[in-house]
Image (cartoon, rainbow, N blue to C red; front, side, top):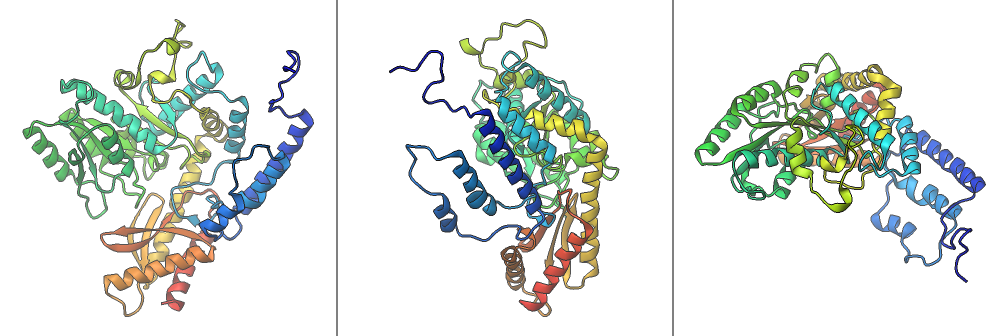
Length: 486
């Protein structure tokens, strides 16, 4: 018998209101348990890949499992093995503690399930995102036009987006046919985020024309190398497409000489892109307010609300000053994307300014956090993390067995110096042992890095739950392991 035209089809996914409400309460309780567990050890539960796979692996089911059983699997097999990025002693990467209000906004965005392609498809969602982008622009002082700004998945996508605009403009100014980019060059320090090198590769620049320049003792781009490279390339008949600088590298938090580079790019007529995915929000604080001058002169910027603005992943933002370059990079006409509205608000389409068609309603969580928390509370949270990094610096400097290897924003890199050990290989092995033991014991989590051949313990503090006692605990644990295990 065919399905009744007045009843639901046999394949209906709908839940009865009571079932949805009951499951919803169970999920909220799981979320509360997960939030409570953010402060509990271990930060990362140790398990092998085979052990975790054994909990989940099975053939594709023909017949479904009850929703209650699936939620039970979330509780028993998934959540226990998630790394607790919101743990107050999680210092591993630029992964923040997520704002609970942002979590609820994310759930609501899933409920309304708006693909935010254009105003005609998602009127209120489009307005929310456009307002959120304008607020982000105001927050960092970029001061660009409203239309080219767009939310994307994260800093890597934002860097790609911005450099696509830069390359498109450079291609036009160099008189190259579209897609012929063999004469274009990009410039960045060797500390720059890998996503910008990837962008050059995907955008069709020859690999050896993505110039990785040297850094100074603070791991900042060297202006002399930049000036020499641009002059040399012009003599070779190449066309500089963009200079990429960092407002806080992922490795050490280093901030390139933004103001000097901005002046240089203006003089040279070269696109300036600032990777502010991690560090740009620090411009709200007194110590880093100087970055605003360069931000206001940049041609494009990336920043990640899911980093130091505490939004749940994923939420990145690309800000672009040249609307024509953005439209030229991403607008492609087709019958099914034709916009017929004539009202300036209602004719807006994100697909004219970005790569994606189907776009998640990321704007709701970003707007919610900015609206509910306000700039003042966000500034205070960022300043709190910076102050904790300074406390860590002081503790490192006060300990004869510890050596600072670099510190900026909320990242500190250091190492333990075992008594009587001076060879670099021995020092590296000793610090690797300390880090691996820390992660295995699970009371805190750090990540490693290597700075000029020196293995470093890297602590990144982007967490509103971290307290001074957690910083002191980190130092004492490193000292404990260094004295007892080496």
